[in-house]
Image 1 (tube, rainbow, N blue to C red):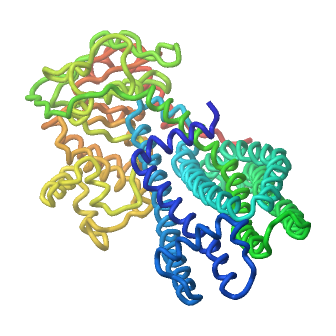
Image 2 (spheres, rainbow, N blue to C red):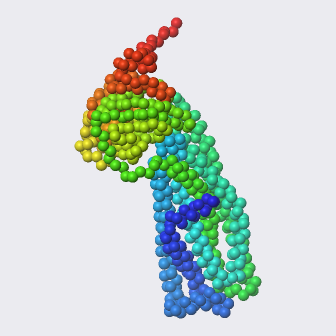
Image 3 (tube, helix red, strand yellow):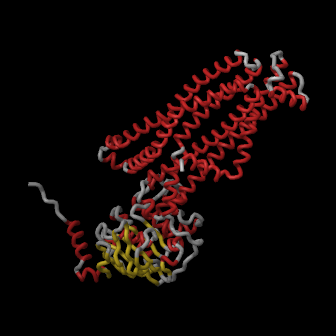
Length: 599
């Protein structure tokens, strides 16, 4: 199916019943405009220009119409023409507003549909794609599709008006109309090659815009690294070729409508000369009729040029529907299972989080293999291991972000796959390695998962996270704007704010995914002090790289190559002198490794 048919079918599906009154309003505007010009015939007859009634059918119809409404004198006819012109003007203004309103609504709907589809998709759908591609599809491509929607509505409107003009001109002077028809056919043939060029240029815009947006997102995200390594020129070198390609494509897209206009102006001049020649060759066309046809031509020519421009712009925008539909279908194919409304799950401590034979595969590779582990709730469980051991995959499984290929995850009486996923996730508070904060107030960041939380609940969560004191010390307290990614806060403050956000939902289980890896020793001590208090009331799963943070854990699980190779308390595992002992010895040696002086 061609992209034009895709867009037109989408237009019909979205507009539904509104398409009929829309075309009706287009016809009313076109008819009003045509009539204002056609009424030049009786006006010309009133000022002495000969209009042979026996030859001009349109003139007889107009005279009968004027007689019916009682308009006989010059001023009466002029008043009628002004009234029709005013009605036509109001119709045209209303039509323009409606077309633009429908186009913006269409763009908004497609953007929201995409965003909802992305948010409803499995986690893997997003992480396997560039953030810039997803952003570009929602922002740039949907904007282009909205413009394509506008262009196709304007083309329909212009076509309706052209048909009305054609019919009126045919009634007034069919000989002159043949010249205009010949002009249209020759012009269409001349524009075929130009339309193909603009179609190809439009097809290249979407991938270039997407790649540019992806590159810009990456460069700004790595801005600190770029500056610190004096790599500004390397960053520029990655962006400049894309801008050069876009420059050429966009230049071509802007030039082709101008070239088409120049061609049309030449063809219009030739056609006008033919009309005059026909009028002067004695083929039975009155001077007045020719004047009216020329007036119709003068009113219609800007619409013909506009139609050509709309077609070229449509060629540039229409391919956006392919990109949007592709991302939409991919997201829908990866949609998380539909569930009934989330229900409140109850877990009564003391209980356990139990993994039984848990296996997870990713890309055909098994990243977790038959993991069996029981974690106390309340209590603190630590998971350690080298990079790539499977710690983060286990966390993703607990959160329902990755689906186990085998085994079960049970929290109290609830098995994860037997309950609604949203309800399961509400049992868990999550603090990632890099706390994600938004350019918003402290309050907005803390209440992300519970926007209706009361001030008392927010303050309680902040106190439990040891964040209350620094929040109240901020200039505007909870209403302080913290900057992009919490740039106005220290690392420890950001982390404690993340913990407060997780605690606001009153979770049964708190998951800390290497949440202290980037903290200094003082900030780490503050967070550990917070966890020591929280472990008395909830289960905590702590993914840690620095072993000093896990010494007091109730259970320590050691992962290696996706398998749980040992578990127990710190004392038990150190006594075995196995894998945890080796990690601890290596870290201890690394901490005190002397630097040999140069000789």
